[in-house]
Length: 403
Image 1 (cartoon, helix red, strand yellow):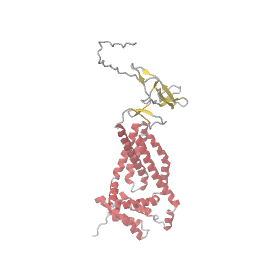
Image 2 (spheres, rainbow, N blue to C red):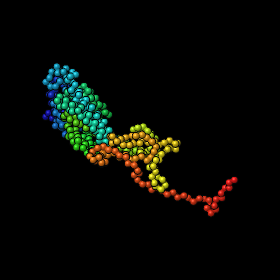
Image 3 (tube, one colour):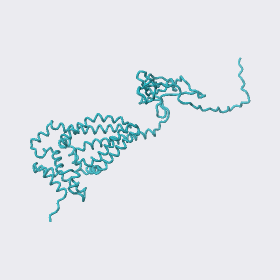
Image 4 (cartoon, one colour):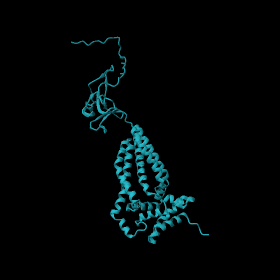
């Protein structure tokens, strides 16, 4: 009784049939290159190593053969050698190259935007995605029109595939690559979880970020669906790669923001200081207390009465001149009007006015600014008890006679 052929042998037989128009020596060379990978995959699947399982992981033998043709620079099935010359000319490579590098550019841009939005906890940073949207749409349109085979036939893609294949042959690198490959199912789920957590974090900081949640949820569901199918349909890389890059950038930015928050919370500098502040847009020195910038100072006398026209100096007689702001009447905005050491300053309130010109907080129509004088709080001045004198109070002091 003859031995039943293994799944790899059946799969390779169909691949050989799909490559039948190529020279026999080249077919053997191609199959020798992929046979170790298929044997490794068969060992990984174990008892479930059937042709159907290989097709689920690699795609059909015919589509796999088409990828091998493209990566090796061979013409599609049924086309002659003239086509080989055509596929390597610049005009034929231009569109696939735009499709490929458009994907790479969008992935890098999304990673940087996610990093910036996470580290600043500001969803407005993500508006920069609108700049990459036209590039992504053009790349996707070229992919759908020309197919994925011309992209896989690009020299840079072939170099990447060869580099990964050589890495798998090395002991240490191969183990790392195999481990990363085994983590793919969990990675797609992790991407969905990170996207949801990212949206919740931004929404806690700014309520308008709730508008991002539907898009993040759709992206999360899409990556869970498309991720496991990427090997069978390479077109899904145009979804998996940008989403994965966004997740990696957001995770790194969130980690950086957490480290910065922890370091600032436990910073030992909690005393008053007077030094140039990097946050000052105008370059003058700023007064800080407890790590926070002080914009106004209120002084009271011993009876708790607020003082006006107070001028502050340090121990060397230098005026503590801080930036002074006021309302610019024509634009209704807060503007810098100079700097001095006179306190207290009016409190600047920005809002809007309604249709009748009345100041209406932030629910009106026209931008407005107003200055509020006075002290916004009252101070309870502690009474100081003078200790009794050590000299006797019974005997009056003898005045010194004068001549």
